[in-house]
Length: 384
Image (cartoon, rainbow, N blue to C red; front, top):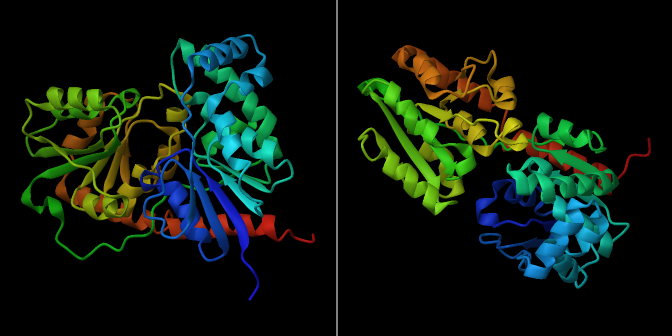
């Protein structure tokens, strides 16, 4: 039996809450000897795990990084960028590896500093230069991340993007043509059951992180315009505890809005299948949100839910003409309510049926085959 090649997966995340990275590892499990660098790696079994070093900026690092980034001395700024510098020290004690999968732009400098000739896959979960809004971000981080993108992404052996929009944004910075790997979960076979709206209620649901930039209050506002038979359940992770508390206070006068504890990732789709329509109004306040094609969108489809969204272009491209959802032409809650409130039970049932049909096309099994094919081309390059 030939010896397994060595793979390093790097992600500045908690893997128990990062399904995309967990899928990478699952897809390649048994084909490589896998080591993982992450903040935590609960549930990964016997994989070799190395904890990401603390990436907190010291005061001097913060000042010098900010100054050199603002004046455009990005190479010098990088030397004071704590996440890359501390990760480089860790990586220098590891390896060598036959392949490295990098899940964060800021890890690429560390990887190429330690292993200049490494075979590298960069999986761009998001468009780093478009992560946030605000003056500080645009003055300090946005230009620095654009410089990192131009300098390092053209070097990688395989560039993966989470959506076409993210891929196009990086291509404007010199990135190669991306392979698109969607954030789709494993196909879930729904149990035969009566349509859940047969009791006259319409059950809306939204799940994800409680992040202020997402303007989740729009989902609460939506309920002000919907009739009494509509109910909304929010399963929100306390990403921003203060914001989550604000949302609960705002919804406290409505008995039709319920906050439930979020469930584990492998329980999300079965939990969602109890509802009728997944809602997501995401104003494009950042470039990332403009190109968003998140896990929850595909989880809604997989759970057999109709999907109700604003004009988020990546999600709309998939829903358009599918009969699986409702797309309104603004991110206005009242506008969406007008489309939802007149839906008949039969129409809701049809949305759900079409959504489940669409999940046959968008699931982790299909995405995994694309991913593994891309990896095989790197490890075993074609003679052509």
